[in-house]
Image: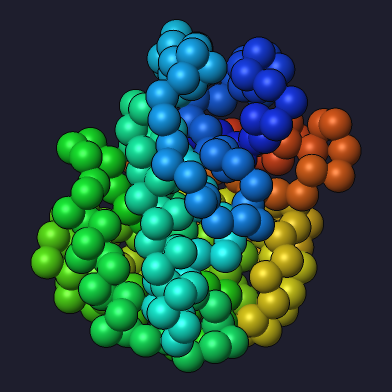
Length: 277
């Protein structure tokens, strides 16, 4: 059975976060450890507030806990200083995740518009894999365009790392659609999971405001974008998704937005259970 959740903000405080989790009735969670648009320049240290947050998340059975790294991270940057700052940021994010007893660190490994230094990226992935504590996985998120949007590229990249078991793939449905994977087609969805070769650990569920193959990363409410409700249903009804955690990253343009999207998600998954019996 899928565990479902949302990306929520902790900037307003721990207690409001816990209240929102309970109101949404979710059992998995994704957060940023800080600003998503800055590198982490100082080492993460344990604190009373982090211990309090860990205890609260344990009390309400949040699993897995996912940290999304800042958007600036690019281990394969052609600039060595950018790659180094990215690696240090991910090292600090791992420490943050370990303190909170979390499971997944999701990060973008570059952009779809600039070339990558693959040798450099593998070097830093190797270094980070050595630091990954037991029970934690580094998850590479698929890009919305370019060569790095192909799932087979991610799979091949992970297999070049010395400890591939410490890594995995996070599939974002908006990015898949933007990269040309037609989620309304069963054969296309089968192809995605064949390319991934068992490495998918997490789903980011979003509809897309961009067209198929557009390379446009603009999330939409479930069933309200160009993937459409039938495309989301086709994707979620695939057998490989049966036990994967699902997190929505849909627009927060109204107080009820997350609740409405989760309601649709629950309905789709409920129908899947009925149809399989």
